[in-house]
Each structure stands twice: as structure tokens, then as C-alpha cells.
Length: 281
Ligand code: G4P
Image (cartoon, rainbow, N blue to C red; front, side, top):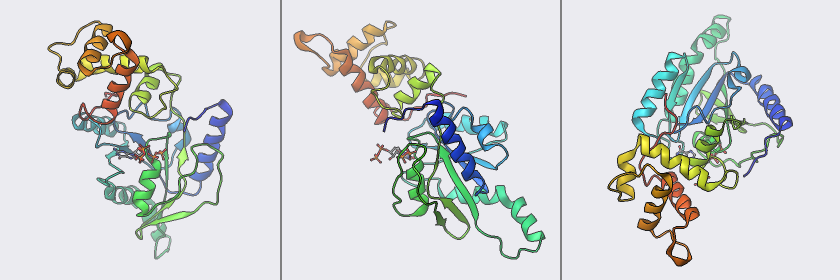
């Protein structure tokens, strides 16, 4: 779904998340492990404020594992606990409850010290920008399929709690926040990973960005995938070589740059170039 984030929309989204925060003990901030900064909401610290928070690096199955490790250390240095997860297969998801429990231990111990014998379940909210995998994670934690509400702030329905074992309750609708899209590079990274629709940015611009990035950080994979003896400095030449090798041709045998752009982005998103990370600590 293409979302138009007008200032009014953003204010409303923020208000809705702020309302939900009143109901919960802990926030699960979902980001894309391939772009953990670019897929973050720019106001997240302000919005979440003092609520305990765990960062979940989702789609870790698609991210470069070495870079993911670096990100975990990077966030740890900022006192942010980050967990790599794959909501689609469930890898790492079980750990979320254990980590949340540890985080909330002081709060629940205080409740018990006040005489509450059986502490209630921890209550959590998942927040994140569209397409990071919020619904997938909710369904994974719920162990069943919960209908997805539109990615539009303001779509209201009765709030429900989903039980995740005995110790956790999750709000069934996530908090939807907007990315930092006024930053051009962030937009290009969101488009490269498929987080935003291909109609929003020019496909060739996105592919130029992606190919330049690959040439710097993953040159061997680029060479291997497109059978290149070397990577031409000139981006048009690189498009030409890939186009010729892959038969992305228009009438008259000239290289069709749109086709090359589509092919490269499809290859990236379907892991034909392996696990890639586009944000670097
Ligand atoms: P949202 O609620 O935050 O908007 O995101 P949603 O769960 O709809 O997930 C967006 C896309 O990301 C979905 O793919 C989903 O399958 C995929 N996804 C979510 N978590 C993971 C993960 O940990 N690893 C991988 N590899 N993919 C993940 P889609 O192509 O839009 O739909 P479909 O393939 O599920 O049909």
C-alpha cells in the first residue's frame, strides 16, 4: 500500500501511538535488519520517551550477519538492546519474551513488594514503519493469523490483547510510524529493500544507488552474479554490461535501462546477491 504521510497524518499517527503507550509496559521497536537506521522513525525516542524498549532487527535472515552483529554492539553502546529476528520463519522470536521479562523484572518485583502476589502478564506494543514486518511478527507471536489493519493511521477497531503464552500480552494492532523520508538516501535504501513501492521513486535512480553501493561493499558478489571481469567505474557502462549479459534489450538490440533496473532490484530483494546490509554502523 502506498501511504501518503501528510503532516496531519504524522501528527495523528504519533497521537495514536502515544495513546497506546498508556496501556503497555514495554515497546517492541521493529526495524529492518538490513537498514536499521533508515527504517526507524525519526521521532522514536521522543515518542516512546521513558517506556522500556527492545529493538527487534527483523528480516535478519536477509541481512549480512557480520553487519548485524556490528549493529547489535552499536545499539548496546547506546543502552539499546537489539535482537536479530526472522518473523517469517520464527528464528529468534522466542527470545523476545525472555528479554522483555528481564527488562521488566524491576517493575514487576516492585509490584510484588507492594503485596501483589501474582503479577499480571507483561503488556507490549509493536511499533514500526510500514512493511518492516509488524503483522508477520504479531501473527508469529500469536501463533495464528490476525487480520491486518490498513497501513493508515486512523483505522480504528476495538483494541484486543493477544496472549503470548502466560507471560505476555500484545496489542493486536501495531503502532504505525513514518520513516525519515525527507532524507534522499533513506528513501533510496527503503526503495532498494522494497519497503516502499517502486512507483514512488524513479526505478533507475534506485538501481543506480543500489549498484554503486554494491560496487563498494559487495564487489565480488556483483561480479559473480553478472559475470563481470571487473566493475566499470562508469555507471552507464555497468548498466550496459549487465543488460547485455542478461538480455535486457529493447528493439534494435539496445540495452533497456528500465529492464536492467528492475532485474537488479529484483535480484537484491530475492537474495540472488546473498544477504545484504545497506546501513552500516
Ligand atoms: P507490516 O505489518 O509492518 O506492514 O509488514 P508485514 O508483516 O506485512 O510484512 C511485510 C513483508 O515482509 C511481507 O512480505 C512479509 O512476508 C515480509 N517479512 C516480514 N518479516 C520477515 C522476516 O523476518 N524475513 C523475511 N524474509 N520477510 C519478512 P510480502 O512480500 O509483502 O508479502 P508475503 O510474501 O508475506 O506475501
